[in-house]
Amino acid sequence: MRMNEGVEWALHSCLNLGWLGPERAVTAGRLAAFYGLPPAYLNKQLQALARAGILTSTSGPRGGFRLARDLDAITLLDVVVAIEGPDEAFRCTQILRQGPGGDPAADYLKLCVISQAMGRADLAWRRELAGQTLADIRATVERGYPDTPERTREWFATVAG
Amino acid sequence: MRMNEGVEWALHSCLNLGWLGPERAVTAGRLAAFYGLPPAYLNKQLQALARAGILTSTSGPRGGFRLARDLDAITLLDVVVAIEGPDEAFRCTQILRQGPGGDPAADYLKLCVISQAMGRADLAWRRELAGQTLADIRATVERGYPDTPERTREWFATVAG
Image 1 (cartoon, each protein chain N blue to C red):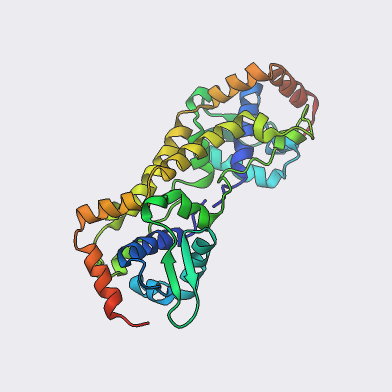
Image 2: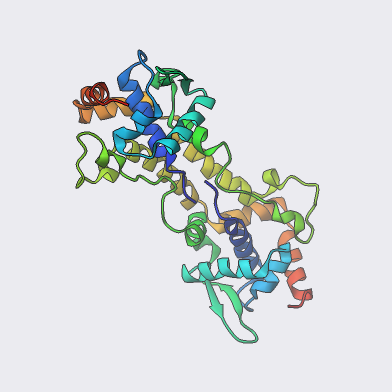
């Protein structure tokens, strides 16, 4: 059970877009070059963020990606769901339906005690992710690494692409 | 990000072994037949539970699987980790190492604020899974479905294999 590595890339790229501000769109190629990531694959993740309403994507010579909303309105869960989809990690395939006394028409997603217990754990995970915004992350980064915003802006200002 | 479906099978099979008691070992084939599961693939999951010390496996004509300990000493997390392995779902690949100002020797698993935040969510998930034993699940099942233990024992007593 492994999360797509695009989640890590997407989270860092959103933070970088936050430091760059909304004035200019930034291409996938430049966002990828910042960490030496494969641009085409990062572009896929950024497109997923755009479909989820986290980024806006514009085409053309000055096109690229911008944040669609402030970082305080983007939770970790928003980004994870945009990349990974909304499904729970645990899939209840309702094997009780096929067991002795099982009812093929019953909804064991709701009835099965195991399914419910696994769902509670998933909920605890989502609650934790939903309780942290990218603005919280940014604030913690800036407390620990006060040079990061300026260094990020400088890099993007001097690197072409 | 999807959990192996063997987690569902393993959890249900452990409950069934709990109702059957430690007197007789039960083959993977019979545990699989209870839900119409593919026996070879369930056997793999049961072997993983045995390696994790949740089941004991004996070979020979009367061989099969037994619980290695009481259900109150087996948490949902024990079973998930036995099947899925110990890794967190979120993989921090330390992309900060390759970024401007990144230190190739630094441990960004610990330093990266995003990695830490994702780790807290993983911990909330694990804490929830570790807080529920299979004895808790069994008790809830028996409250809601008091016939289940006897029906399970009857099925295994009458079905060969």
